[in-house]
Image 1 (cartoon, one colour):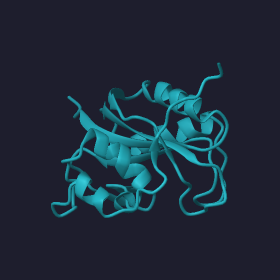
Image 2 (cartoon, rainbow, N blue to C red; image 1 turned 45 degrees about the horizontal axis):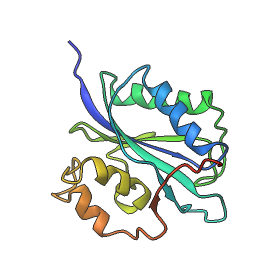
Image 3 (cartoon, rainbow, N blue to C red; image 1 turned 120 degrees about the vertical axis):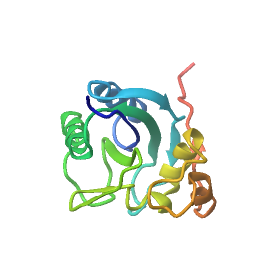
Length: 167
C-alpha cells in the first residue's frame, strides 16, 4: 500500500490570461493529486526581476501517492504542456508550479529541495500558504510556523485578486 502525503503546491503566472492559467494548472494537477483546499488568488508584485507584469499566485493543499521526484516530474510536465518555455531566472512565465512542503519529509537533491529553499523569504508564497495552514511548522524549520515566517517578510503590494468583468 502506498503512502498518501499532504503536499502544498504554489502556483504562479504573469503571462496571458493569468486566472485561466491557474484554473488550467489546477485541472491538470487533478490527474495525479486530490485537491483538498485552494487558497484565494493573490495579485503580487514581481520578485527578482521587477520589470515585468504582476503575478497571480495561489497555494493548493493536495494529497498524492507520488513520491517527491515523480511529483516534480509531473508538475514540470504540466508547465511544458501549458506552454511554458525556459526563460531567465525569475522572469515572466505562463505558469510556475513549485512543491513547497511534502508531508513531514525533507528532500535535498540537485533538482529538488523540500521544504522549498526560498519559501520563508517570499511573501507571494507565504500569504496564500498562511491562509491555509498558519500554524504549520515545515520540516526542519526549528519551530517557525508559516504565520511567524509571514511576519518577517514585506507584504507590500500583495492583495487578494478579484476578477474584473466588463459591464
